[in-house]
Amino acid sequence: MKATINDVAKRAGVSIKTVSRVINNETSVRQLTREKVQLAIDELSYQPNLSARNLAGAKSYSIAYIYDNPNAYYIIDMQKGILSACKQHGFELLIHPCDAKDKDVSKEVVNMVKHARIAGLILTPPLSEMPDFVKSLVELDVKVVRILSGDVAPDDLSPCVMVNDRDAAQTMTQHLIDLGHKDIAFLAGDAEHMSTIERYKGYRRALKASNIEFNKALVIEGDYSFDSGVNGAKKLMSKQTANTRPTAIFSCNDEIAAGALFAARLMNISIPEQLSIVGFENSPFSRQTWPKLTTADQPNKQIAEDAAKLLISQIRKQKNPITISQYVPKIIVRDSTARC
Image (cartoon, rainbow, N blue to C red):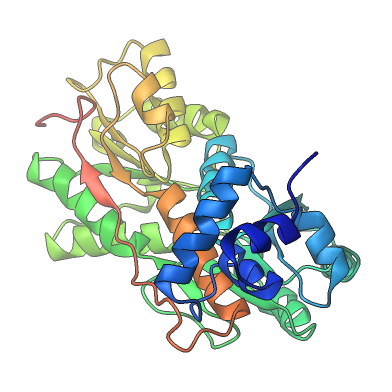
């Protein structure tokens, strides 16, 4: 027979309520008591039934990750990070993909929160960047933490974990400038994502700081996909006159960069001898190409784990809630860039 919470309490010589506090990682339990309870849990191989716990009382121990993002690597890293925090703190995770462009998306998520008895939500772009959508959730009296691009939160609707894409993009563009490149193209991601806007701002700032004239013809609109990189690079490198062809391409993410590199190879353009290409995020795409991509390391798993810990601290109304400093992705120089 499986051990019960009563068995653990009896073995440790404490109350059932104390065992529950230990399982939930509540700070009010003394260290010696916590160790006694944990020893009893280990000896009895006790596993709490989180689903039953949610149903048994008014307090919910489930959080949800709500997303709309076509990048599988990004989603997997987010899930891993959130799950890591959930396991540490005794919470369950519900994963709910949805279509941010659906006019009924708010209604869909609101109904999910009510029926699944969710205690808190983690939102990533573009959903985290939709104020009306966020308001509809906050009004449910459910805790929300958003992951956003930028250096400061755009409002006070909910706590945020910020990713400073602008400074990282400026550093990345400066890396290309330091290699002697002046004709630097920009392959954009989805226009509605703040990450695209912030990375574009960083790109423009670097050009301005080095007194390099901005050339609008070198900016190609697109989305966060491999095909977008392929099509964008073909447009850029098919230019007939030398003064409109770039010597370097800044891609808004690694998937776009991988597509751009693929297109360049089809056109018999040598990387990096004839064209330098950089990506962003340090996803597996950056390591699966040849040559491997220079990129900006965005630690999505750690960002997600910290966002989940922040959310759980809000749910538990801790006196000293966890605070999150902004992340600035760091440049990783690999073989896809060289001197002009």
